[in-house]
Picture 1 (cartoon, rainbow, N blue to C red):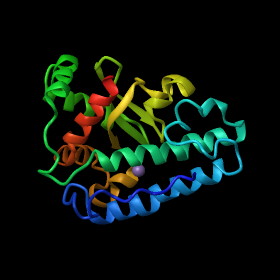
Picture 2: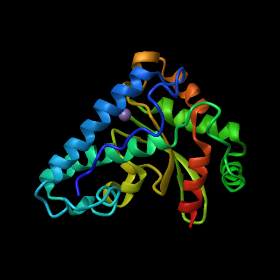
Picture 3: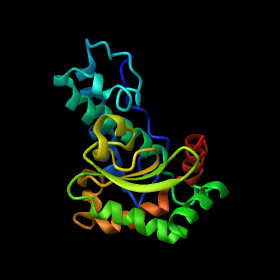
Picture 4: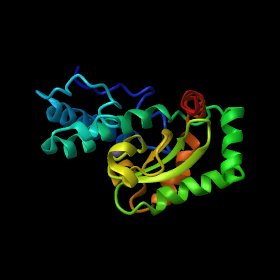
Length: 214
Ligand code: MN
C-alpha cells in the first residue's frame, strides 16, 4: 500500500490570516505531495513497501537498506510530520481548549500554559535552518518540548538517537521550514510562531494526548 496525500481537513484559506491560503496550497499540494511521491519511490520494490507510516519511520528505519534509509527518513518522515501538522491545526476559534488532563500535564512540566508556549516557541525559533518544534508525550503522561532538524521526528528515537529530540509521541508539531511561512512572514519566524497559537486544534491535541499517555 503506497502512501497517499491526505486531504486538508479544512479549506486552504481557513487558517488565514494566520497561515495564508497560498502558503497552504503550495505547502500541502507541492511540498507534502513531494514527500509522498518520494517516499513511495524509495520504498517501491523493497519488502517495506507495505509498511504503514509511522511504522516505516519509527520501528523499521534501521532495517532499511543503506541506500534507502536517508530517502525514507526524509520523505516518509516528511509525510508523517505534515499529516500530523494539518490535523493539529484548526480555523481560529474552532480549536477548542486543552483537556483538563493535558492542561495538568502542561502545568506540571512547565508551570503554566504561558510558560509552555514560551518553551515551545523557543524550540521553534532557535531551530537553526529547517525543522520542527514538538510537544511530546511519554508513557504515563509526562510531556516534554523539543525540536528536530529536517523531517526527523521524535518517533525515530530508536533509529536515530539524539537527532530525534526528546522521543515519546509527538501530539503537537510546528513546521519551521521556510516553506511553511516565508510567503507571508518572510524572515519573521517569531511572528509566524506567535500566529500559530491562534490556529491550534486543542481538541485534536488533547485526543492524541489521551491515546499517547496510555
Ligand atoms: Mn513543511
